[in-house]
Length: 111
Image (cartoon, rainbow, N blue to C red):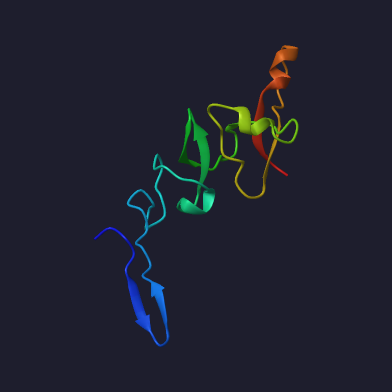
C-alpha cells in the first residue's frame, strides 16, 4: 500500500502524488521550529543554524548584537547563526567610547 499506484487518465497511467513528508511543516514555522530555508518561517523570523540543524529564529531589532559578514561563505561555518538585522537596519560597529576591543562588537543600527 505504500507504493504509488497508477491512476487511469486517458491513454497514460500517471503515478499518484505522494503526500508531503510528515516533517515538512504545512504552516509557517514559529520560533524554535525546524526549517530548511527562511521562507519556511513566519514573518519576523529567519531560518538559521543551531548546532547541526536549522531552526526559525527572530530577525534582529535595533541595538541587538549582529554578525558582520566578513567574507562570502564564512557565515555557513557558524554553529549558532544569527538572523540578519530587520529592514532599515544595518550591522555596524557599536558606537561606544571604550577599549579598542569594543569596536569588534557589531549591533543593528538605523542607516
